[in-house]
Each structure stands twice: as structure tokens, then as C-alpha cells.
Length: 157
Image 1 (cartoon, rainbow, N blue to C red):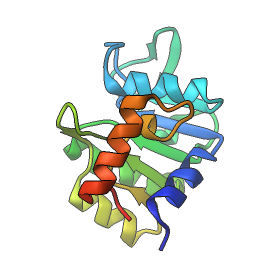
Image 2: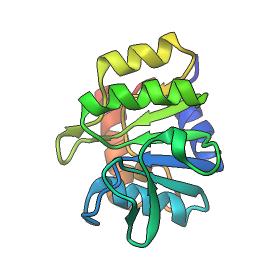
Image 3: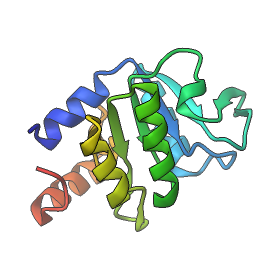
């Protein structure tokens, strides 16, 4: 069993990452995660079944539709959508999933049934946290959030 830090390092070591939940509203969390992953050198694909492009970048209806296979998927959606996305990941052979959780905004992408599905299907799943807490450079707010969540026991061990 891997630790949270090991799972995060493995996830962020991947070259191609899809972000599910990217929106036409550029202030949405998924869009900020998309941009952060781009800024850290990842090849990032936007996933939204209701958009062909966002900010001039192509958008794909699902993880199976990207022009190149992705190595990992960051899910920033409602939990009920997360279930479908992890099934798509399994069909596409994707072995790493991160379900975003925003403590400040009280928004979680995590679905217990999706976590169970990942565990049952050999998909490494990070069911909490945010890449802003780990992608360098990490701002003081997200460093503090990671420390606080770790102290409270709300980050997977």
C-alpha cells in the first residue's frame, strides 16, 4: 500500500493528464487545476462532454476521446459524475485517478462507490486533496492546508 505522498508523486510524474470537469467559466477550480498542471510541464487534456473547446484549447467529451492515451485523470466534478468517469478510465486502461477535494469551498469529487470501483479494478486512487497542495511551487495557503488536513487525519495515509 502506497502512502499519500507516494501516490501524489507517482500521479504528478505522469506526462499526460486529463482534467475532467473543465468549464467555460474560467474561475472554476477544474480550470485552475488544468492551468497549474500545464504550468508544471504536463501535457493536459480538458474533459467536458458539453464543450468542444475552452479558452481556445480543445476539449474532449471523455477520457477515451483524447488524441493520445492519458496516464492519469484529475476529477473535479460532482460525485455522481465521478462514478461514470472512473468507469471510462477502466475502459481506457487508465491506472491513476485523483478525486479533487476543496476544504475551503466544501466541494468534493469523491464518491465512495467510485473509490471502491477503483480499488476493485486496479486503479490507484487519491480520494482527497488538491494538486495545488503538491505542485511546486506550493503557495503558503496550500502548504498550510496540506499540513492541517494531515494533522486532522483527512488525507489518506
